[in-house]
Length: 210
Image (cartoon, rainbow, N blue to C red; front, side, top):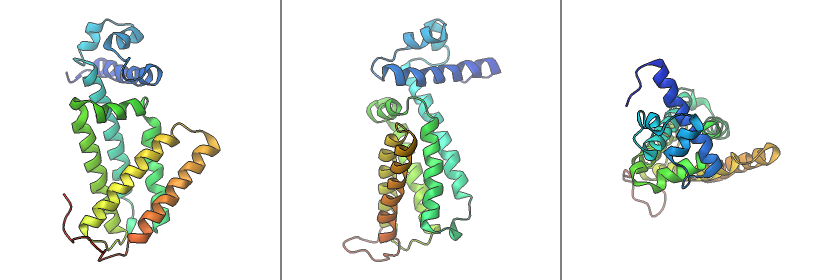
């Protein structure tokens, strides 16, 4: 149900926060609505008043994460990308993107749920489509001359590289995290700088990728 009162909104937020903490402690398989209710100090029925099952809670967490990512990507899209060099853009991209990963409790189990639970597949697909479409537009504004299908391929490669590396970075601290972050930026520089001015890449048809 959609909470309409402040108290109800606060309870729904508490359920999501507690679920994120429990995901970190017990993992996805051992997470239950009974455990969530016990941690909150309420009945299971109280939890069901807001979410009918565990998957609905995870779906709401995924939507919350996607909303945060949307906000950070929109912030970057509003910047003067046309005047940025590629390294400066990647600094901004990684900073905003990584902040969303660091803020989300129970991120790794949540990502596993979005990929592995059929009821959450739609969220995973929305996430990928959103990020790729934003990256394609940003690359064009940065002056990439690659044809549409190649720009799409580079955007997907950026997504997969960032996603994998950021899941590593959020579990590191201090110097290790900073070094891995710098490695990610250098990897993206090698990937993108090589192709950004390739207007006619070999063996690729100049057609819009699906």
